[in-house]
Image: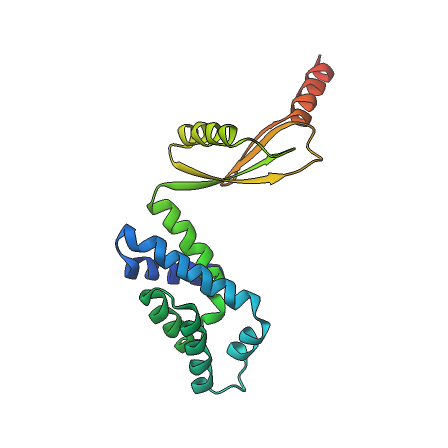
Length: 180
């Protein structure tokens, strides 16, 4: 079984533990902090993955990490469970899967917008509203600046790309001229 499938199963289990929508965001935030801590610490990854480190020492290490982070109670219990099942190394993948499940449950979607220069707040809010109407979901924007873009906006919502860039428009004109 692939790690992605296993991570999704654990994410669904945590989703069931988290229960109400109010708790989902705090559980997701705690899980995010734990995943970031794990990913940013090669020493932690090495200690957890090592067969030479006794399980009692691993539990102590995890307890210290959890004490420092002060995560949501569900995430604390979940992380300890993952350690017992020798699946703590999946925590970044589990976080990504859990984040997607939370977005689906709360009818949200993330859109990545690429522009040539920073846009004013009013323009971003207008774009967010348009994308919300287009997708039927509450949209949160992340903006990337790409000076190589000639002009316009390229938007990615999930796997869908809406290319409103000047380069794309020029390419469409070129194709129409070629086709006659």
